[in-house]
Image: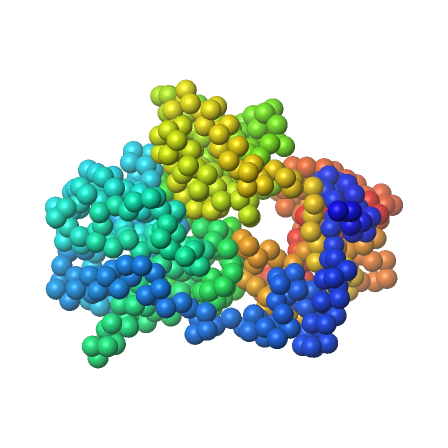
Length: 583
């Protein structure tokens, strides 16, 4: 099949990317969308790229939970889980919550704690230490919890924990998870998981917090049937939104509605933990999906990565502003420390991966003493840099503990689970976009070779990082706040729903100045009076910084995503630059 010509003729940009614009068919569909809906062409083009038909456009732009929230009972074991949960609440039983140490686990635990608190109940929170206990339930902890509680709820973990669940007897165990299930389930009273092997997979895109939310929906429904008013669930959607974005769940279907509504709840600043975290991060504008994924999420995660594992969950669960402020300060400090550790591991991992070759189906690196709390972030950085699944492993005493991140269309969790089943990994599992694994150092090379082989069969490595997909071209004068607000209606943007990316052709670079260690800020002008502010984060980590900071008389084609920059109470449009080339 003949390859379409490069957009604006850009075959190799400064970053080595080939620019790809909308196809002729997409342009025809865009014209039809504009005629049928009277939407702005730029927004219509984004909807077309999402596969939205004109008759569905309004519904897509205004997603509602009433229309999109699934019936909780579609998930196996949900009725049993909610009924047992309510029985424990009514009978004042001792309830324990065993949660993963990341944002999804912490948010899931906080959802249950806030709901229980509204019902006048408390629960014991247990979050394992990443280094000492590793991911998921372990037998000593579950046995201790089982001896002191009659119900243990495992959130964002437990689906593969056969031994630890059995060790919890005589307590009942309810699992609310989303990680890929095995051929058999552990001996829990209920295992609610859209990624169980006997589920349809229709709800496989839900994070664990969404599964917990659905159980609370069912619990409230059972209460209503008894004439009892349950806690306000809509007020909890800020936690669901945070978990959905931070866990890189695709922003499709009901996830869009959950995040849209959750951002509105968060903007009310009613949850002390998120208020304190927003303030310590100096967020001075209404929250967007970007803030959840890159500002708040990493700070909540910092405790589980390099500090006390329960700090993030405690922050999200507290109702005390003073406690929230202290926890937020601690998490912000740990996040700074985490970045320093991450940078050291990232540089070493990238050098190793480059030496091994970045064109394989799998990009991987392993090093002695690499902190297990940052290997997942570094794997994400390798994945972003290469557009390939990536694994980064920290080695110690002959054992490697690693994290993996995937690209759209490649089910990484299933591949890792298969390599574990074949005996090349000590253990491994996850979901489509992320996974964890433990491997003997002696089997490392063989395990990575087998994983690469399985991923290649799914198409990993067939594309590559060269293509930069663009939604069209704009003039600087057209990049206005009203246009950006219109485009935002197609959001939230994130995993599975990338923000629109536009090209600006033949522009002059004005007033370029370096910001911090590696960022660049400048104005771009069309030479006709219109100018647009532009920021290029990490520009000096690659070729963009040096070239654009010394533009001479050259004009440039520039590509990036539009956003509203609010500073000091004033808002203006801004281009977040991703790529450029001389015109």
